[in-house]
Length: 81
Image (tube, rainbow, N blue to C red; front, top):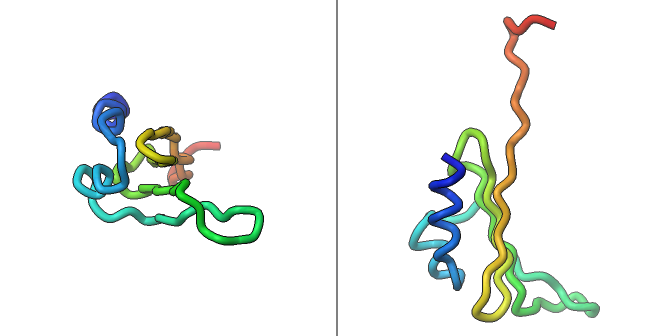
């Protein structure tokens, strides 16, 4: 599953690519500058595309950095200690 997400995320270059491939994100904000005003650096995050992973994009001008992070595994009520 993570390899499919990685392959899809590798093609992202702009925010519109994110929306086209993964739909509406759960988080989408511009980073502020030192005066608190929005910059061109955009943080787009998806939490519900997988039961096991979250996907985070940092999109400066015409480039993309992304990370795939494992979600914590919840304890089951019937789990042994």
